[in-house]
Length: 288
Picture 1 (tube, rainbow, N blue to C red):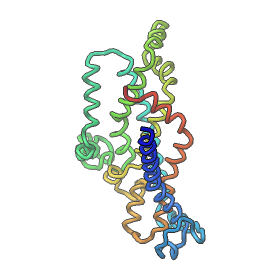
Picture 2: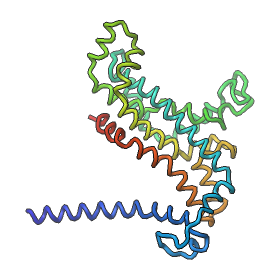
Picture 3: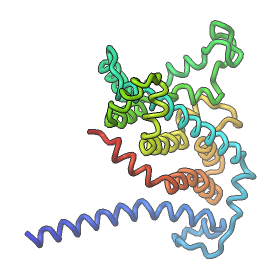
Picture 4: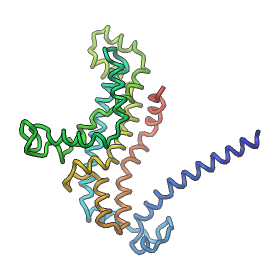
């Protein structure tokens, strides 16, 4: 029995180390390649420590394409998605978790069912709605004559302003908080929004942090939808810009690796800063 336990433990540690190696080593190799010279990269050697460090590839990224503009676009869209999802998601989550109203369960099940639909199915209808948006992008009152909201930040922000997952996540958190807090505030004459804003929302900091990180990561790494609705070069996000760079300069590995590292840093830095609240939020807002 004891020997079997040792075998299971050894296999567990072996699997963990194997997964860690297969995950971490490619990332370390990417970092290493971004600091190598072209001759060393093309030599085919797999050494993780460059023989001669260089920052030329990082300079070339900004010289070859408007990478600074791509970073700015991604940052605006990611932070905008975080702001809208935190506000509307927590507002709807509070309603589903703390309030009583007719059709509450049916409406919540409808939100949950929307999570089961693959995003590829709704892309064309969403594109048509944005394309025909009245009085926007040169369109008339009937949504004709222009591009609507296509090729603007709104084409990304509006469809994802209140995601079903953010509502579900915040609902799971708010329904664990005592309802007596809200009842006491109502007896004091506080409005429902004031109860939400001043009583319950401050208690949701761990859940908001977790949802914020997940939303930022999803928005920052988004590729398919931005590629469809943001068609001008000045509106491209960093992921779309890197894909275009890889297509046009598919053998220029140094700048590609440097751009990949620069595109990865914001998410890593954000996670390191707020990792404690992130873990706490996952624990407190977990599915019952």
